[in-house]
Each structure stands twice: as structure tokens, then as C-alpha cells.
Length: 159
Image (cartoon, rainbow, N blue to C red; front, side, top):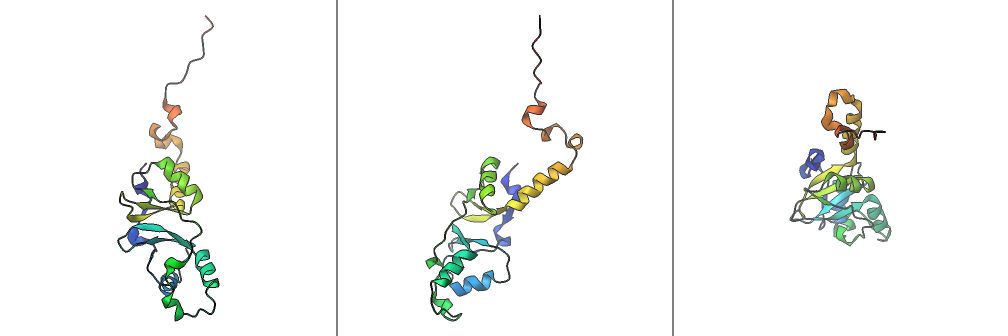
């Protein structure tokens, strides 16, 4: 299976640009229920991810901050504790699954590191769950594990 099957395209993803101010970031992020979002350069290149915690710790270090002053605070000055690992569009499923184990979503970039979307862990889990809902007899041999449709080994003869 190809990772594009699971892709949520960039136009459907909440992200910010690295040159956003704190206020722009807060306004764009308000009323959203995401703990982590991608950070991009204006040319679309993937920079990393930022979390709500990164924002809170950054605000804590800005004593006396008000909303108006937040317009002058570049979001790029906030330390990011952990960036989500991005994968390329040609990544195999094993690598995608390894990344999804550690992250709620996996950013997907092209060969120039330009962000094209994300793969949500829930999309992968839903596909796996749906594959278990369908009885094996209805799926056909292509859905069986590799070893199950290979020729079975015969027991050694006692001749």
C-alpha cells in the first residue's frame, strides 16, 4: 500500500509559517484541537513542528506580555522541544508505520523538502481496523500474510 492513500493534503492541514508572530500563530491556532502543527517556510519547505507546550513555555519566558505586544514576538524565537520526523512521498509503509508509532501525524514532503501534507496515525489505524472487520474469506489471498499463500512445507517422510 502507498502512503498517498492515507495523505491529508496541505490545503486541509493547519500549519504556520516560521515568520509568523506569536499573535498570528495564536489567532490561526485558536479554536483548533491540535496539540502539534507543522511549521513551514514561505516557499513551502518543511521546517519542523511546534506544540502548544512550546508556545506556553515561550510565553512564560516573556514577562509582561500582552496581546498587542505579541505582534512583535516572532514565533521562530520559540524553542521547539521535539520536531516530528518528516517522510518523503516515496517512503515505504514500514518506515511510515515506524514514524507513526512515535507521532500523532507524519509530515510528508517531496524530494525538495516541500511540505505536501500529513498522514494521521488515526487514518492508518482505521485502515488496519477495517481490514479486521472483513472476514478473510471475502478478502482473497492477496490479503493473507506472505507465508500463508506460499506452498506449505511437507512433513519429512519416514522412508
